[in-house]
Image (tube, rainbow, N blue to C red; front, side, top):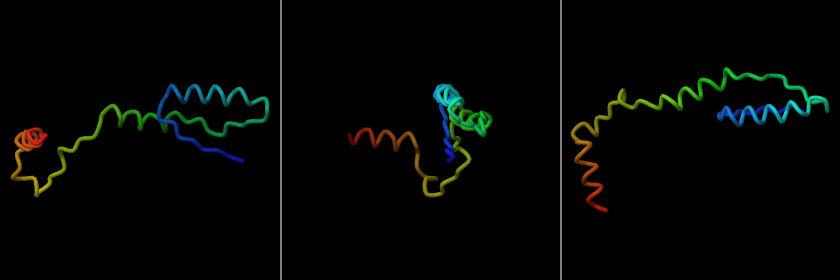
Length: 75
């Protein structure tokens, strides 16, 4: 049997790896331990997404601040 898991939290990764390593004497074999796959996920979360490159024509005439004020006033 084989199990593949993806863990995006590095602390959780360490804990699970420690737990799995304790089963090596019982016949568990860790085929791949690749922390490099984790780094792009963490980097993306730290940087965030930049939506400034997306141009939406239907919002061209809309002032963002005025729209926010209007929505707040409705509450």
